[in-house]
Image (cartoon, rainbow, N blue to C red):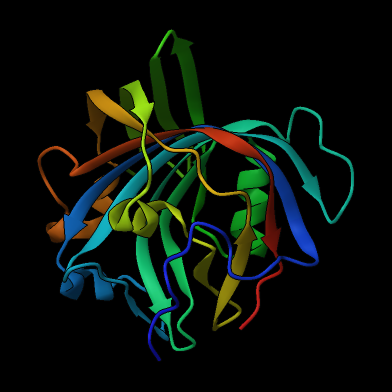
Length: 242
């Protein structure tokens, strides 16, 4: 089946929502990849999603706030934390586009352990730092558990002008779900939120070993795309489904 169209808004609502969150200060770094080596890292039943013959790997750094479970109130302290993830882009047999997380590093231990053990997502507990100074955003990451490398990052960007999303920006950011393995099956977790408010960004500093999870096919050199969003309220994440 052909992939669903790229759309700035979600193609379907999430109901019920397993999680609700606000996302803040989101920085997207992306590198182009050959689809063939990326395919080996994707869950069964999915294939690389491509744009003009290329797929991508992304490092996304953000702050999550006001996490709430199953319609309950926002969780104090434990529901607000920094996160850095590494992701690929995939499409399944139903044509649903999504991301595949190769790693997720969260500042709070309970969400990291809970998501790793109950949802099968590759979460780790990490020291995640964030600083805002004028138009500059800085993120720091040092993995705490599990400890084998890779597991560090330092990212600094200067936020620029508003960016109207074109096909590439939609491909990289307008992702309305994620594919992963759960209990021996590939499932799809649906995501709903308002359209991204994107801005250009200049990469000021990058030091990381997170892309080593790709193995010998890991890209080198600067990213081909650097974007920023101030974020959004009321991100809804659905129950995993086949």
